[in-house]
Amino acid sequence: MTKKTLKVASSQYPIGQPKTLAEWEEKIALWVKNGAATGAELLVFPEYAAIEQAACFGPEVYSDLQATLAKVAQIKDARVQFHVDLAKKYKVHILVGSGPEKTADGLFVNSAQLVTPKGSVGVQEKLVMTPFEKNWGVTAGKTVRVFETSIGTFGIAICYDSEFPLISRAMAEAGAQVLLVPSCTERISGYHRVRTGSMARALENTIAAVQSPTVGDAPWSPAVDFNAGAAGIYVPSEHGISDTGVLAQGTLNAAEWVVAEIDIARLTHLRVSAEMHNFGDWSVQPGAPTPKVDVDVVKLI
Image (tube, rainbow, N blue to C red; front, side):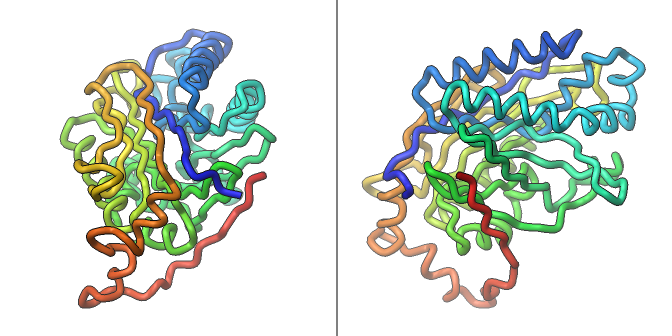
């Protein structure tokens, strides 16, 4: 049964240069410990946070983009299992920082994993590639999913995906109550694009959107060398839930957790009782597409 409220912590995660995997694990473990200490039930890490692991393997790996993608993809299972162990220890759900994953046909996709305290793992690949990712040889995923958990039903729109309304609309139609938006942008303009997309998707669908960015400079990496942004937790600007649409907003480029409580029950009620009925009136707009996107509903228990 879905809870009426959800406390979520969104990370402004600083890309560092760990010398060993043990050092990286210590950093992640501390971030999860501090995130759980806020009382949050869900911790959200950003897009391409996994690339930080490349630093552990020396310049022959971290200074070469293709070597970085290959090595980080190679250790994906161990990275996800480490987060599963932390989720169990601290009794929290975690959106693992996304990273490259190698498919059966030898291609790289950008995938994020949602893990639960009971050890379940759900995966969402990024669906729309940026020009940079196309140049890197990262390819688009094909499947849109939503994840039913004990604390709520989630969609995951990785960075650029949040800027395309039909993806999130399909997730909302399939039951998503909260949209998780891990992001990685090198410029303030990019951060604001994703922020605007997140707020728009929350407004259109009467859901919450949670943005989590990478921050800080990592000149050692050709993939995540510059990172700018702030975490935010957004809802429709409606009387009784938020006048501004912003439940919480981080300090630009600071390394910190940003925390808010989302009233999921109130959001659901607003779909029929709010000043405006954006979710229900979607089909009224001229040219509105009928739902044609297949969505896999994944139960994570």
